[in-house]
Image (cartoon, rainbow, N blue to C red; front, top):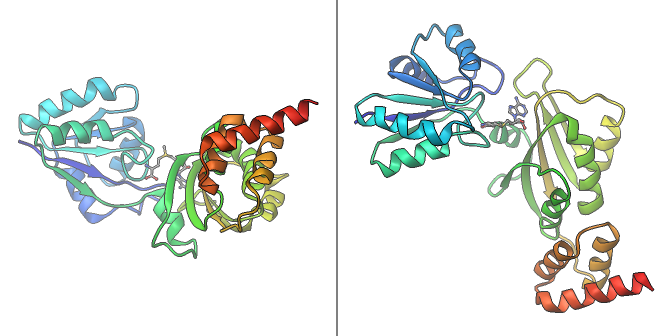
Length: 273
Ligand code: SAM
């Protein structure tokens, strides 16, 4: 039986790789990489000549059993993604799961991850935080922000540069002028970390062309609960779907959904009249 190593790789700066990761990448029989061309650059920088095979989102289902077959035959395999820790908003979990189900040893080789990198430099208390993956697109993004309302907590999101401004507007609308951090191109030449109120940062970025990879950190605030009707009306006025607004308000105020739903219908009717 071989070993499946889950190896973290740099998120930009090639120096951010551990000595152990390099040794494992040299010693294994095969490296399963999200993008073999991308990983080749890292391997050639460190003179690693281990054979590569592709393992990405759209071939995960077929490829995982093949790789598990090789592991069962005794091959050691290293799983890497394009950047950071495999499986974190990246392919990986299917192979890891299948290996575990087949009693194959799965060994983590820790290293960089974009979310941990930004948090380490955030200046926020880090005993508790929530990673939410990529900011969803479309209407559900407001819903995600809504569900975060009311309590003091740290949330981390991945975001694409072309949606950042829109996302900042939504954050301001739903969560208000909270403290945020925008980390762009961490560990790379154009690394930039902006910390401050959402409104100020949105203003700073307004006329800029945003490029590169981005992580957003949000620090929500504890809010004194007002009247649930006022909150509900605010959400409906902001264009939130009725069901989403009802769910968020009933959660926030600990009220039965039916009660909030009735009030939402009343507000909608009053608007129509
Ligand atoms: N597995 C990776 C990890 O452990 O961080 C994440 C992969 S995910 C497909 C890619 C996203 O991570 C990017 O869109 C960006 O949000 C974030 N990211 C990766 N590298 C980054 C960097 N150098 N600076 C800022 N964000 C980065």
